[in-house]
Image (cartoon, rainbow, N blue to C red; front, side, top):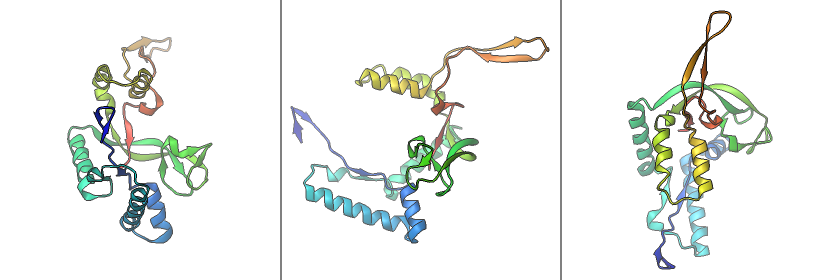
Length: 197
């Protein structure tokens, strides 16, 4: 497609696994691969009827084994490099769905899907050591053609901290450790982020 003298690509994709498919399977007994396949076919039919200009040859489906074999491949590479590990961390826990939720899935202290209360609960989760590369991630934003506010959001989310750890002697004789760095945003506290797989 030609748009103002630029070639523009309009791919289409389906983020097809996750909480909605799991909840539907629990409620109905229908396997997620079956319900997801039907839903994708229906959405695709509707989009084609609307005549939207997607490049269907570049369709992505996260529930397709040809797609998720690569996410599994990446995870194994991260794991072998000690970039993926398990840790006991506090998560948002829906008391009804009995699953962990992202911050975006919690609305006014309740699960956005079922409305049940959400509590903080310690759970063993896969984590990725993203801050090992914080400096590189932030430095590489310099050459990117992004809006400055987007770059600032990315820098704040990545949360690189610069400073030093200092041991202070206190009156009772035990050292107290302090850090001179700026605080790390809560999304990356502990130098890792939870991984949903």
